[in-house]
Image (cartoon, rainbow, N blue to C red; front, side):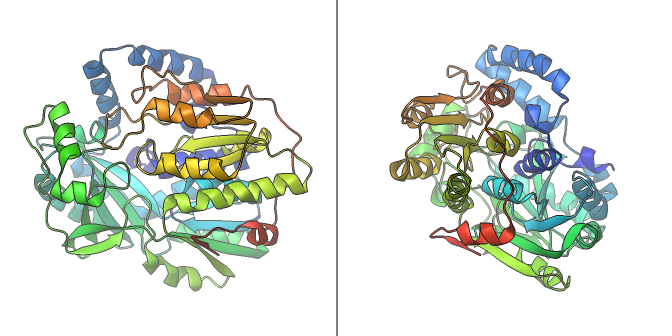
Length: 453
């Protein structure tokens, strides 16, 4: 099976891979990098039409669009991990790089990599698997539905571990007809080894991106775990024991359940989407190149450090530091952040602790201009930050603040905003192009209370 058919285009890792690889090729990534520029006006118009549909119909369109990407269970044995790795490295221009990043997905990392003119090789990819006949609020049934397909995928791919992730809160629409199979390399794939050997500069450095976030899981098989819930608006306790917010959420969606009854967790493992599987380090250390480890406890821990790094670099090169570009989830654009001289500040999602992370940054640093690319996931999920919260935060700009390309009345079903945010960003005036950083310079500037390099 072709990797482009097996890997989800709507996932954080895929979106970040496209955004960074486009940036290193000197291009931006319209429509999340998933469509040619000429198609963007048509896509924008179509999604604008979806925005105007009744809520129930818009939800169906969103869900069906995702299911169309899902892999039939009978085809999982046709997926080859080596092909997935080859597909990943094929995104990047073939030249020498001073640094190669490897490991956890992270939006702030994409800006650090872009500033260094460096690629990133993800450890984790999402394979959506077609599935029907399971109540999305019955996690025990979901685990059983994924047991045999997981065995088939892993049978032919011994270098992978499988995190079958099920989140009926934030992924409610998408999991109506699919399972989320997040695979992590525990061994360094051949294509990654070859790419590093052929494209890392002689004096280059391999930097591992290691997010220490973990989550309670249920062991299914030797290389297969089931993760119920995920980082976002609901906390672990709500996923596993329920509560008023869970009860109200399920009632609002017409569920017959008042809480979820997931399988009992028996261990903690790296979080499916963001966490780093440390077994990979053995192969990285054996490469024979200098290796540095970039470690952080939470995905957003890296964001203030990378923002300050950009502020310091801009100031050192005589460029203003008065613009902030806030990004969420896979909605990010390192090409235009650099072109416009914007300080990038990435948030994992539109819920939970993310508004507080941005608020804390704005309490310590002021900006004349604040622009935000706000991700809409289509669900009134637990812990969702309302549009008014984001409008208030960008409104703290001294002169100008906006949520780019947004339809506030449609949020969190503002599907057209996923395309229009990029188009609005391209209209921001460009600033003088700055030189790229060296790794030594970045290393000296990258500082944060929960960041270790």
